[in-house]
Image (cartoon, rainbow, N blue to C red; front, side, top):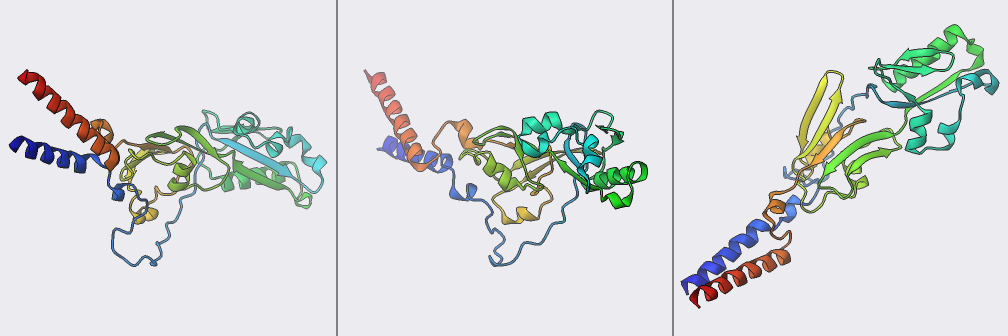
Length: 262
């Protein structure tokens, strides 16, 4: 009788400790108890500053296309937006922080925002090659928003999104979501800055994460989703799986006792 009670208690404890609770799986929960319709305060986004190995798409236009044809030796980047095409046809920031543009030569780009670089190129064109009447138009963009994600997600690897701003929820959705054994409460963001590397954990189950400066990603961010301890235990992720594990353990234990008595 005592052994039966022990088995039941063991099974109950294993059931409750091995299952992953719903509160660990739901994103953006209102944990503070404030009314649900209270708006999240806006977080000012810091402008991204270009780094080594960034790839840029640069287009120079004018009223007369012939005037700027030499600055645009290929229109490949305009017709084919694939990441591989942009890698070969775009302008890569080299180890010295420069890009090479036809006629203009080397232009320092590291540490500039794309808007600052656009103004810099436009000024040089007007100072050295064109008059204001030419109506020079310069467009500078990052050749895709690149980030890398690893760990407990559906699809790991380096991803490209062709948009200017990406938040962590969009990045995770684009990577097949976090698996049921992924830790949503401590998602690690590794960010490269001119001053060094920043590492920060954010809790995606808390709606207040939207106020974090790490909620909105920057190009080249690295995201790591750690596994929950339930995965390393090798038990069940759901109640049904846990019950199956419990039954298996009890059957194994009972069989062992029977064999020892023989």
